Amino acid sequence: MLAIEISEAYSFDKTQPLDFLLDGTKVQYSPLTALVRYTPSLKTNLRAQVTYSTLAKGLQSTQLTGSYGWTRGTMGLTWFTRYDAERNDKTQDQIGINGGLYLWPGRLRLDAQVNFDLKESKLQNDRFILSYNSQCWGVHVEYRDFQATGFQQHDWRFSISLKNIGQVLDFGIGDTVNAQ
Image 1 (cartoon, rainbow, N blue to C red):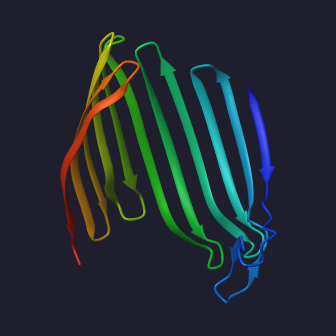
Image 2 (tube, rainbow, N blue to C red):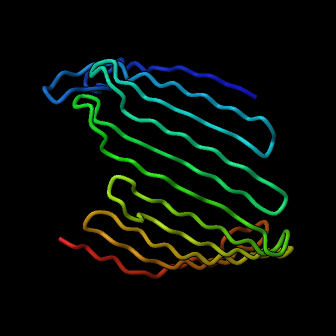
């Protein structure tokens, strides 16, 4: 039900430092990571993670994730923040919402995912998936719209799978725009 983990890695290879500063200081150990997982039921979980740079003496990232499932679907929320530990500055702040719902139990399912960049105040990614499964075959249709600074990508994906064989058809089409 509850798990707490604190970890730090060490590299024995002097050419592979695990943490460094802008002034060129490098160390063989990684930042400290603390992770707490709480699962009060089979359908509910909560996860919190913090990464702290002992070299820069500051936070590198935080993440909080929760999910809930029920007979006909699932839903989840993630909040992720990344920091420049040396400058004590927030470099990334994002929230993600996802969910899935069986429209026809055991057969037809709709899933959606939306990520919003709180720092830039813009929608970064949205994705919609419609899946149909029969006894021996399945169809999957997906639409995705991804946006980042100077980059935008839209694509569609279609696939057919056969039970005990796997995907027999998988193709996608889309466009990418680079705004330089």
